[in-house]
Amino acid sequence: MSRRRFLHLAVGLTLVLVVAGAVVLSYFWLPFAPDDTSGGRLAPPGGDHLLGTDKLGRDLFTQLLIGGRIAIGTALGAATLGGVLGVSFGLLAGFATRWLDDAAAVLLDILIAFPTLLLAMLIVAGAGASLATAVVAIGLAMAAVVARLTRVLVKQVLARDYITAARVAGISWPGIVVSHVLPNIAPTVLVNLALQAGLAVLAEASLSYLGLGTPPPNASWGRMLYEAQATVLTAPAGALAPGIALVVLVIGVNLTADGLRDVLAVKGSR
Image 1 (cartoon, rainbow, N blue to C red):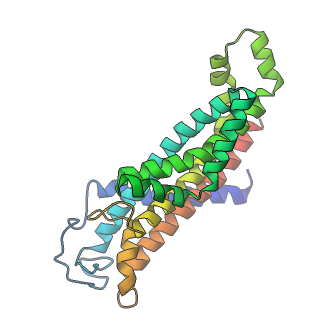
Image 2 (image 1 turned 30 degrees about the vertical axis):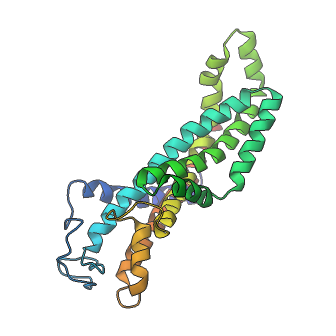
Image 3 (image 1 turned 180 degrees about the vertical axis):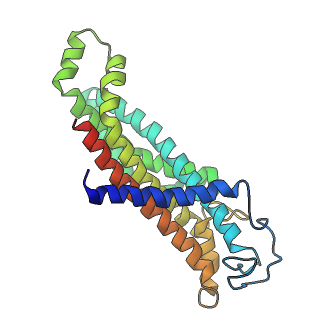
């Protein structure tokens, strides 16, 4: 792996671990209670309030930590759901007969034609705004992308000579999936899921900004941005804090995925 790629992985992991560490810390310690409004409206950073307060008098640093829980939880939940559903559907399509495979390909193309945020908005609008609904909606949108990638990878693996040799040796299809298909497609799928996790963070923030994500009093970074837009000139910390946190996490996830791709490619070439 090149020095530049190693730097990508190191920087990406550092950024992700900083955010994840702050989120873990928030479960054991918070500067103030989430609903504590004793700080005064739009207090500037300093003193007891590291980042100041919002228009309701709540501590912004506390809100930022709670928003980190939602961002990390959404990324992990949506990636897990999208990965399980996408890989399962992709495996079935890869092993299906030709007409079933063609039908699956058309279905996936239709789903992918809808932007992730638009598809998530349609699901959330029908099911109601909540964190669980947002995770499921983003995960379902993510599953279509993962399924199409998995389908292509499975077909490439099944065309290899060692698959024919395994069948001649009497290994069953489930055994081939476990011993040959999954190990060969796992690196590419994992990198894709890491990239999708970054998109999930942005999708959740966008949903919350539009009022379709995690409802109040939960503090999502997207909702914090929405609430701070009216006072961005007089109290910029309210918008800068969640905006910078969002950028740091997404860049960290993307750099980690980029570095992870090279690490897995080097291992796979040995």
